[in-house]
Amino acid sequence: EPEVTQTPSHQVTQMGQEVILRCVPISNHLYFYWYRQILGQKVEFLVSFYNNEISEKSEIFDDQFSVERPDGSNFTLKIRSTKLEDSAMYFCASSDNGGGTNGYTFGSGTRLTVV
Amino acid sequence: KQEVTQIPAALSVPEGENLVLNCSFTDSAIYNLQWFRQDPGKGLTSLLLIQSSQREQTSGRLNASLDKSSGRSTLYIAASQPGDSATYLCAVNTGFQKLVFGTGTRLLVSP
Image (tube, rainbow over all chains, first blue to last red; front, side, top):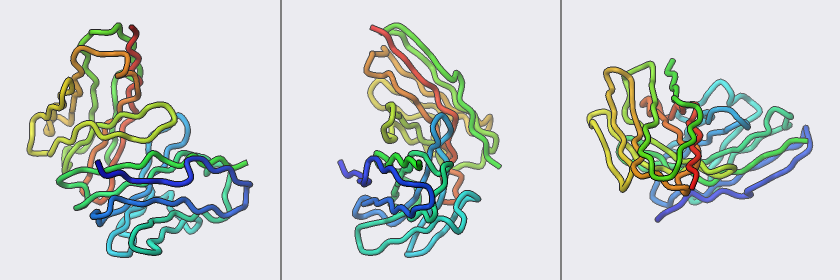
């Protein structure tokens, strides 16, 4: 069964550093997403991406965050100047038609620890 | 603003029991609802997707129902097994390119 692949599985970074989280969505999917889950809290939407641009973003997704599809297979989330409160599990997801027919497929996540 | 709540927050049952997990949402204008399973420290595994026009979906021992007008969905697990122990999340597709997740139900099935 097709999978969404995320790397790395765990990243530790120092406060103030920049990190890039990487995702390879399912190959024939057109819509891509990032979500995050702070320990013990709900999974929260960050951003959706379609046709090489952001289609929706949450209040959390401020200027500290950016997304990019640098080539035909990767989808990245960049977090600039990380803060302690950015520590969370970050999930990438993809869908073929915006989640209407076949829902969303999530990756296994990247655990980001900011120290 | 869509809010999704799941009850109970935690559930502990002996193996073999049938059980029901509840999900409620405040805005009935949804596209669909998806149930996920999350193992500790792991990703989200999709279990069932139920469209707004459907009443229920089944996969093996799992059955999900949807009552859109009352803002409720239930996940029924038949003949529970220790391997079913995980956190179960429901998520509502609001139609604005995002899912709104519930608080989750942490299930423990003991042998």
